[in-house]
Amino acid sequence: MKGTILHFSIQTNTGIISGDDQNRYTFLGSEWKDASSPQRGTKVDFDLNATGQAIGIYKALGSSINTDVADLVNTDQSEEKYSGFHWFVKCLKNYVNFSGRARRKEFWFFNLVYFGLLLIISGLFGSQSPLLILLLLSMFLPALAVSTRRLHDIGKSGWWYLISFTGIGYFLLLFWWVTEGDNHSNPYGEPTK
Image (tube, rainbow, N blue to C red; front, side, top):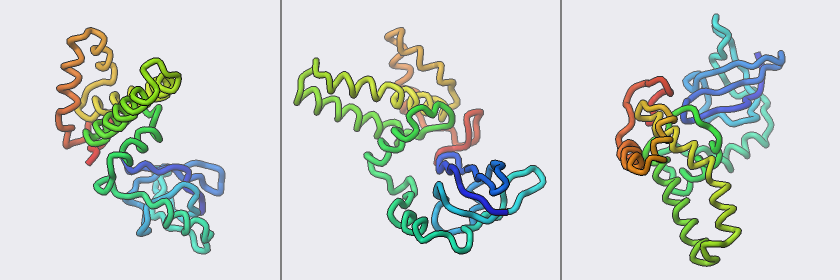
């Protein structure tokens, strides 16, 4: 069967293919049979298992050269090679993703870059700057989402974030945010590393 990759998540190691039959099929990263990581828009050949999940996924013969060039330009690095800014960008791309898990590195680098931007903008333009207010508003959802995913990594519901409104509850959140994530599957997904 032929199709096109619609989405692939490195974090959950799962993806979605839109088949030429106009149906969508999920797949696991372990079924991807190419050296480069799966990219959105890549034409693929695949088979289906008994449950309707895509298996044995190969890049289609005669795939456009543009896809191959895009792979070279937009290579997904393994997370071990991410810099602090890469983690920040990853959080921005997942800005309303409240499901799944976020490792400590992702959470802390996001907050470090965010805090740095706050310091720079408030230092240059003052604390009443419209630019600072715009940054605060635009980062509200990404910060909330990565905080929720970080809580998921240690097996806690994202609703625990509300404890920060009690004042002293923020210290409990801080403790949880520095705690090592579960090394096994939990209700929120597979381990992040």
